[in-house]
Amino acid sequence: MLQDQHGRQLTYLRLAVTDRCNLRCRYCMPEEGIDFAPKGALLDYDEILYLCSVLGELGVTKVRLTGGEPLVRRDLPVLVRGLADIFPRLAMTTNGVLLPKYIDELEASGLRHYNLSLDTLRPERFHRITRRDNFAETRLALEEMLHRGYPVKINAVVMRGVNDDELLDFVELTRENRVGVRFIEAMPFNDDDGNHDVFLSYADMLARIQAAYPDLERVGDAGGSSVNFRVPGYAGHVGIIPAYSRSLCGSCDRLRVTPKGTMLNCLYSTKGLELLPLLRAGIGRDELAELVQAFVWGKHATGHDTERAEQQGNIFASMTSIGG
Ligand code: SAM
Ligand code: SF4
Image (cartoon, rainbow, N blue to C red):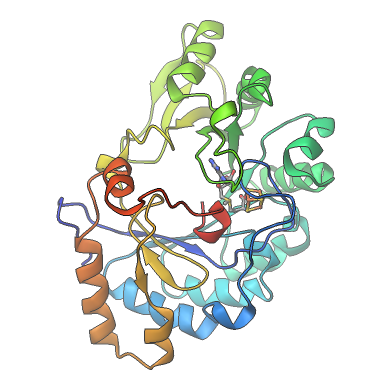
């Protein structure tokens, strides 16, 4: 069992499999990319599966593949098959560009749960946000998932003056479609201006949506990363993720592993447990389990506490180094 000092059980692993990406979203990465890790510095699939089998025995039941863009990692379906043997729940967060190409293989490997990152419904705006021209592929990914009846969630980072005029368009997408659209507060990871100039808070987003839909009702579970709502009669729902306000930390059940094999207790951590040298030195299962248990015990109560305790002005250059 993995438990922290605040009584929370950690059952959900966010596994970042690469720091590379085929897009360059402005809130995430600078145009030229970041200092990407050389291949040998990444956990290989055997190392990942060994680590995950130990985490599975420690009570982790869900893994989400993220990155960077997970689909740019070579032979990803091979890893997915291995993970499906360990965890009952498998999911991926993707920008969708390569999804139409791999979706059959991934489904055969056991993956049907996706969060699709899509910050705009307007083709001309997609390039402004991502610096690439892949709107058509991402929309195709969405259509394909809906067509297959997958439980789709859309992640949209909401930025003042960039795409905040589309809040209501996204809400309208939930009228006919059984999708969950989740609006994310921009966090200060982009190696640039910290996203402060475009920041729109949870409270501001909610106020704008409620002004247009006064009968918006709160739905769903406490305990996820978003607070969820539904417009009565609509097929899908909308959620807001207070990623920067960090008001949902109390129910956090997550641990993270970066592409370079650092285990982190929080998105706002900069200090972690360096697993790659241990795995390469052939650490045994029991010793690994004990180290991980001791590490997660020290998880701070909130992301604000983590930031105060660990960051001292440093911040990851990009979410791609940590996995969003
Ligand atoms: N490439 C994949 C994708 O975009 O879905 C997975 C990795 S991405 C880092 C994971 C999530 O983090 C995406 O939904 C993305 O929008 C979000 N994200 C990245 N940088 C962010 C930031 N600075 N603030 C808020 N969300 C961010
Ligand atoms: Fe790539 Fe995802 Fe970052 Fe966009 S948010 S640059 S798609 S890793």
